[in-house]
Image 1 (cartoon, rainbow, N blue to C red):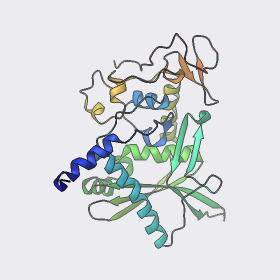
Image 2 (tube, helix red, strand yellow; image 1 turned 180 degrees about the vertical axis):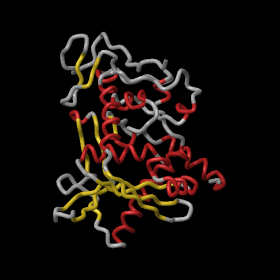
Image 3 (tube, rainbow, N blue to C red; image 1 turned 90 degrees about the vertical axis):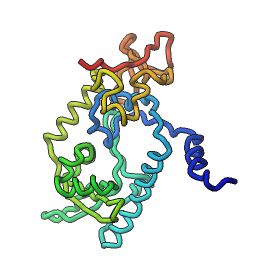
Length: 272
């Protein structure tokens, strides 16, 4: 074996891996995305543009660092509830029959002034040094609006009134934390956006794929017709999401069960 080729071998191994199943819901982590069409494609389970091996490793490192942060929080005497005891998995919050979902990194419980136990949403992020310093200077709301939208949506779904945001600097291993309170107006704005998407009114943010907002989007290939979605009800232009978690055909008015001969690819409203 030529050990100088190890990086190439590792990249090839990533490329050969089977792609994970694409989510079919609007997730809290993406509600702050710049484009409504991206959320609409997520809702319908449209295929992702696969990230390159380096980006996949960055994501994997971020997930691994979440465990490091939780370990350090516990070392500091902060009791983190990482798993829902009823499911053994992450705490999950849903709406509209599961078409909308959020997953918390954990919960931190504290006593309120009246003696009740309140659960705070824990959100953990890792950042490079420049993003970390920007967050430290401006606060999450202004440095990372997509993260701010995520925690607001999580609080709205869960009923929590407070979120603990913890960031880990990947360059220096420094920490920062911020307590973020529930903002009813911010949540209402997100709700209105999500409702528009559920009603098939999502609009593309750009007129062509050269737009800077499209370059890092995981739905860019399906958006710009480079890959095709599977032929099924949720990817059909005639279908609309229903509150029970299913899909209804707007042409026939009945619940969708199987693809039909009249399937037509879903497309968001063009920009402009």
